[in-house]
Length: 125
Image (cartoon, rainbow, N blue to C red; front, side):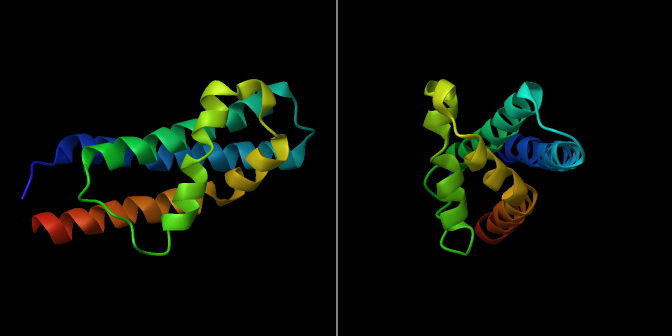
């Protein structure tokens, strides 16, 4: 057994509903009116924060958290966008952001459930 900072993990997980709410609000806004530059940057930031959430929790769980279930590939796909959003931000394609934004609330909810399930199982909580 190894140390896992459950409090910090729970703090990050507690932020996921806020992230999903922002995602839903932005989707409604972009569906209701023409998207502009502000919405484009909001998409980038929401997806970037989702990526950081996944990588932060992954780091906190060290190598104990190996996702073998159905969310592995979508999370891998999401995290693969990190370099583009952080280092190559001037070339991010809007269509790619739209696709990720649509799936993000459900994916992040599944991620949160998976982390909590892992902690209960592995740390006998």
